[in-house]
Image (tube, rainbow, N blue to C red; front, side, top):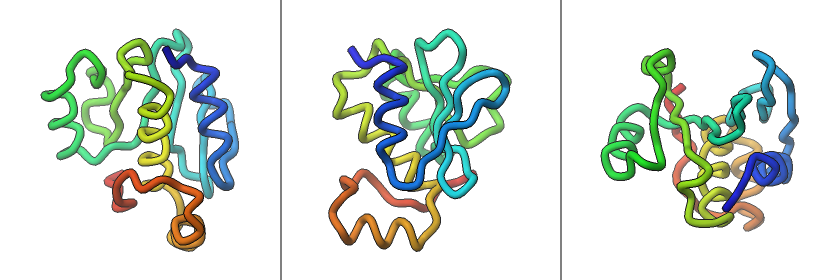
Length: 126
C-alpha cells in the first residue's frame, strides 16, 4: 500500500516540483502552483481535479475519492491512500494533478520527451 512518503517521493520526482509547508502540512508545487497536499493524518492526500470529473470519480469509487465539506467549493479531491491499487495508480493521480498546475512550456517539453506518462490533459479547473 502506498503511503505519504511515496506521495512525497513521486511528487518531488516530477519536473520543477518543490515542497513547501503551508497550513502546517506539506504541499507540493510546480511554478508556484500547488498540485498536491498531504494533511497531517497522512492517510490521504489532496490533488487538483476539475469539478465535473471529481463528481464522477466520487460516484464511481467513493471508498477511494472524497471531498471534506470545507473543500466542497474547490477544484480539489482527496484520495485515500489505503484504497489505492498500487504505486502506479498513485503516480498516475499525481502526474495528472501536476499537469493541471504545470505551465505550458513545461508540459510541452516533458511530454514530448516521453518523461511523463500520458494520464489526461492539463486543462485543469482551479
